[in-house]
Image (cartoon, helix red, strand yellow):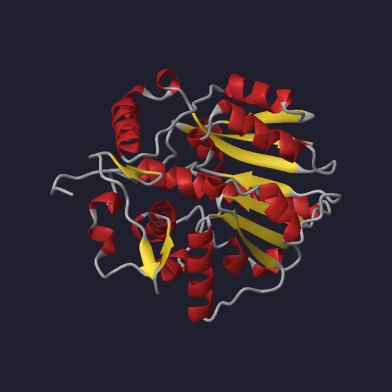
Length: 305
C-alpha cells in the first residue's frame, strides 16, 4: 500500500488492495473478520465515552502488531462512519437478542460470525442460550485456537460451525448437525454478508430462515444503492465498490428499504421492518459532541417468522 491514506469497508481498501488475513500455525483467518474486530476495539480507544459497545476482547483475539492504530485502514477520521456502523449494528443485534431471550428464545445463530465476541463479553446472557457461530472453516479453526490460547475456551453452549461455502456445503445441514433445534425459535443475524450474494442466493437463505419455528427473528444488514447514500459518502462508496471488484469480492446486491422489505415478504416472513441509519443514530449516538454517526450506506432489516 502506498503512503496515501485509504479506507477499508468489509475487507477492501479503496486504493484497490485486498485486506490480508493472518495465520496461526498455518491456519488462516479472513481479513475482513480481523478488520471488523479492530474497528470495534478502535471505537473504545479512539472515540470518547459513552461507547456504543465495549469490545476489546476482539483486539486480544486479533493480536495485531504494535502500532496497529497507525495503519491507514485504522485512520480515526477516515473510518469513523464505517466504524460507527460496525458498533451500532453489533449493539442493535445484541439488544435484540437480549429482548428475545427475555421472551423465551434460547437459540442465537450468527451467519458470517467472524471474530464476534458476544459469547465472551456477555456470558451472563449467552450462557442461557445456545449460540451458533457459522463461518468459513479457516476462520473458525483460527478463532477456536485463539480462544484456547487466551484461556477463554469454547463452552458447551457455544458452537463454532465451519461451513465451506465454496465447496457447496449447506450451512443449514451443518447448523442442525451442530445441535440446532429447528422446532424451537431462534434469532438469526447476518451482518456484512448480503451485498456479496445475488438476489437469488439471498432469497434462498431468507426462505430457509423463514421456515424456522414461529417466533424466530432475522436481523440482516444490507447496502443501499448509490443514489440513496448521502452525497458526501458517494465518492468513498464508488471507490470501495471498485476495490472490492478488483480484489475478486465484488458487491453484487444493493437494496432500497422497500426492496428489502419486499424480499422478506416474498420469502415467507410474516412481518418485517426497516431500521434506518438515522434511527440507529438517534438510538445510540444522540447527544454526542464528536459528530460520530453511522454510515448512510448500510441499514438493517428485522423480519419475524
